[in-house]
Image (spheres, rainbow, N blue to C red):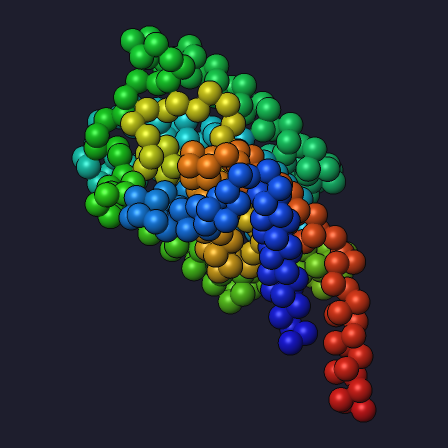
Length: 347
């Protein structure tokens, strides 16, 4: 049971957050039972709502997977936010101006966005590997820089003046990702992200490079003493993580929109950190963590529409989950008790 401690800790954190949310609903809602029912069952009430959950989970999986790699290597990097934004813009440029066949066009746009994400992500990685720069600070600064550059390009080079809003020209239809399920907006990006999750899991746990990544994250000094070139590992993991975040931005833009219409950072990069926390930095667990986060957000949206409780309640749930998961002492007494019991069994 002790080996599942992290899973139990995460589930207890989620349960406590939901209980507190239900208590808040009971205090402020005129019909608390109906409101809770909408929150819990609304996301699965129709095919379209189920589709909304899956659609929202796709970008969360991409950024969550990117952050998992960085966190597992010991890098507290939150730069996926800016990479997601700028890579989506690059994919939009290819979708607007390049003329290609129906299959090649989205592939080229996604690859372009992914490569830009990788190249930009490696800059904080090099700064960390060579000069030990604080990767949290550099990645957050890059978010602001990339946001400003992206908005400049959108406003002065891509903006469609006829649209009367801050959006780009329309994408060519050949660049759009195909729909998978009629009646929803679930697109082929779902298949792509699931393949990336499986590939990342294999990379982390079944290759020498993945072992070096995990060793560097556990103890960089010991990894260097063991002969691992940690500077190379840090740069490589930033390249891969940036590639995944960039792919997520490109897939989201081409799968869900007909124009580029983000006028600010979309927030998926920071959400990726929450997904990574819920997944305990395990690539396969990213699927469940992203679906859960998407589920409660769709439930909160439905609740705000059909009841007297605002959707901001979901922010309280997220905050409580983060506080409990990040609190090292939470359930530590239970863990110590289990360790003592196992020690007694061993004599």
